[in-house]
Image (cartoon, rainbow, N blue to C red):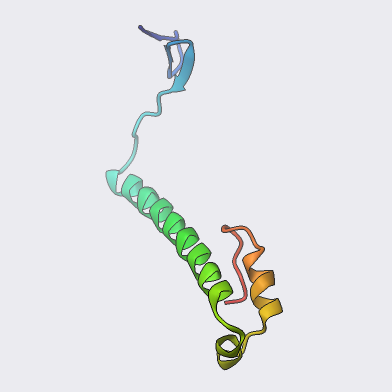
Amino acid sequence: MQQKLKNHNLILTNNTVVAKIPLTGSLNLSRFKLSKMLKTLHDWIIREQHRQYLLDLPDYLLDDIGLTRDQVVDEARKSFWQKGIF
């Protein structure tokens, strides 16, 4: 059962209130926002993967690319949304 709450863009469904957000403005703007969100999510996933790959490298390869094990461990401790030294 859905019930629209009077004078609000809210819908009550199964005792849960859901905000109804009207799409106003240009559709291109909405696509831009969605595209930006997807890019951010992609960047976070790639960042986390790269940190894991670096952790898996042996020390001699880290030395070849100019990194120390301590730098890599410090980088890997960061949250996925935090930009790193790379």
